[in-house]
Amino acid sequence: MRTARLTAVRCASLLALLAGLTGCGGTPAGPACLETNGGQEACDGLDNDCDGTTDEPDTPLCEAGAHEIVACLDAACQRTACQDGWLDGDGERATGCELPEACAPSPAFDFGAQAPWFPCVGLGPVATRLTQTTLFDQVDQYFGAEDRRTVEASAELPAQGCFGQVGLLLELGCPADGQCDYWDRTASLGLVPPDGEPEIELARYITPYRTGLCALLDVSELASRLRGAVALRSSVDTWVGPDSSQGHGWRVSARLLHIPSPVAAPQLELIPIYARTYVALGDPGNPVAAQLPPRSVRIPADATRVEARLLATGHGQGNALNCAEFCDLQPVLRVGADRYPVSTWRADCADNPVSPQAGTWQYPRQGWCPGAVVAPARLDVSASAPAGAEVEIGLEFALSSGQEYVNTCRPGAGEVVDGVEYCSGCTWGQRGCAYNSTGHTQPSEDVSLVLLVTR
Ligand SMILES: [Ca+2]
Ligand SMILES: [Ca+2]
Ligand SMILES: [Ca+2]
Image (cartoon, rainbow, N blue to C red; front, top):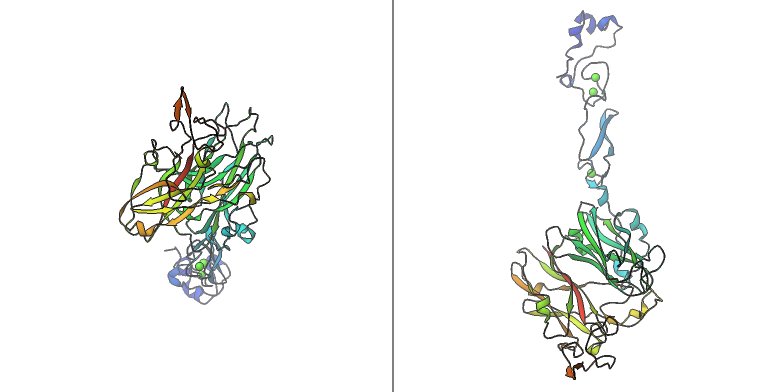
């Protein structure tokens, strides 16, 4: 309770005061002041506590709604502003400033319209509303006295889950001296889970021969992991560096673009199955299952949909059928007893807008093109992965005809004559079985796999 009661307690004469003849302390008196609102100042145009000031601002007159700044103006409590970072999204006073600024609606961006090359294009009106977070900023990657093939970073992403889309802007440039690696290398950005789970491959791309690229990708399906503090890895499988004669490496930049929407992107539960793994193929003595053991996974009891997100690219040449870079070999996803062949062959490499390049960029390849991002395959496997069930998940590989691939052109597969091993079926007609680092390299598949669970 404020000190003011009837002002009369401090006055000589109550009657005189009521008559308006004299004021307190002998000052000329105005009309009599009677306490109102129990003597508590309120925002009502009255001097409720009779202290001579009406609706004095040093008194908390107005109660603020959610994230509001309010003031008593013209005898009424009014919102003068929303707190920083908040908006009145619904126009309703009762809900206050209920909308985080980051969640204010933005037009959606049509990432799919840029398939299959996903070049960097203007974001149009989307650009004004998105939140950008730098993951890597012109980071040099190379191999040499210092091994910078893999570099790590951390970032703080927006915490709120009100983003309708999450984009990835990837820029691959040449080192400062302009000397890009001469060769096409497999590269990826990985998300490192905090709890020792397998790394989640955010994006994979293949470097162009001796030039850079820029790609804009939709990674919204991973949105549930793209918030708050994250740890990241950038890997480029390069073997050149500052002292090399075939280019000096690469320079990597990447940013995440959180595009707001009151309707958040589905927060899929991600179950990482395989981090990016290099699997040797075509050798019955080294089966895939030994390199990539099947994993048993408990599907959440409230799962309504289970999808697989697979990244797979074939590498190696000079083998039987020129596998696995230049042959139509397929990953086959196994979920329980069911098998899902995935066609990865790309016959469109010659259409790549990242061209011309210095090498054989036009040739079709298994799952990739030089200078292009690798689009993940997304398969609905709900029918094979019922809610609550324990399901075994694995990867196999077969030729698109369904036949098993056996590389007859490999060390140990040939016939030894006078101490020299001779192979058959080699792409170039060569007889030697041994791998080298140029025209005859081990057939292999580079894979990563994550389950996306809708609950
Ligand atoms: Ca007052
Ligand atoms: Ca008042
Ligand atoms: Ca509101």
